[in-house]
Image (cartoon, rainbow, N blue to C red):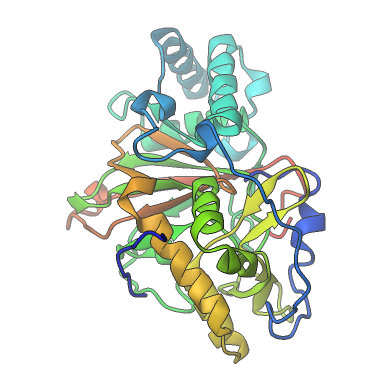
Length: 357
């Protein structure tokens, strides 16, 4: 018997990635209309990667920064105070950080072989300035993979702040205080293999984070909704929010799930999908809409995800194709210096460092 989900209105990638996702501006009419069956993963994901709320432990994702690493970080910051350098040109290869490098190797291993996300706990927001914290964050992140652009303008470190704008077809939701549904980042262009969020300050109220395994979701869709899972392997239009060169298509075309015979990669953002179809003036097919809504309900099922508040000084890293994340709405302080402030970074070693890869 199929489970009953609460009604809700409305990965892994290597050099083979380009073969799967195709060209960013695929000239496909009516994505998903083809009847040719796409290549699908037909097994069941097991182990740490396909976790549920009952199977995951806090120790699976929470990693303390040990005292010896904290000492190295303090020495690194002191060296920057004596020899300042722009954050985006800092390289961990230029500094003696043996214990920190070992720590971040373990973090990357958890992203690859563990539950797919890690909360690094934590940097001192009292001992370091915001600029110093960002420099440490850059070094730590660079030990996972190469930082890449996360906007068409080439931004490498992105401020996640409430700008007072409202969510809309031309406004990215991370610029608002509104609730964000479960999604992967940058499903509409060249996604990063990993991404991080550094917490510099927290909201007055709300802003709780959530993470869910997209491999667990695949298991659930395969078990209870196999015909809809097949639709998720076929393309959807995705709004690109103007993050492209002039003259290129405003929407890209990609499936939610892709499988190359070795690894599964996922892109999921319902808001981008619906906005993409509106942008190109097409109607999402009924099967596609049902597949997206069912996937959304699976992710929201309490048994499938975990929730937590990130504290100032903590950093969360996720493998973008294996985990989706969300954030509840929040209320912020009137004082600009106290407002919720996070720094996002995109990390991948394949492709170019530019936004479109």
